[in-house]
Length: 121
Image 1: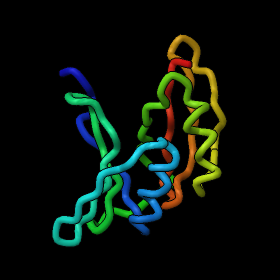
Image 2: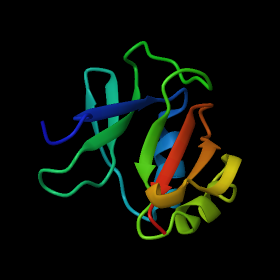
Image 3: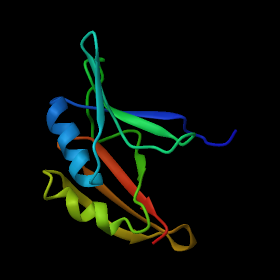
């Protein structure tokens, strides 16, 4: 098993708002599809890499409690984290050292999901 995670989905109340938020935070376009009312906005991922998406219409609801998904913060998570507030989210825990495992930060997106970043720098 190469990865413990193969896919993740972050639910949204307002799909366009959520896609716009993550596009701003990652400074990247999210490709979107609509399959009979189930909408998905795909995060950029390398071929063979772990991917995920923002969803709407699948019955899932955003939440602050429960599973915490760590998104790739790149070389330095300070870069995407600095865009969170400007894009309409809220930084819950600033960039924090986790020793030899790098750094983490936690934020709340525009939909109310609690999400984290991880980076080695």
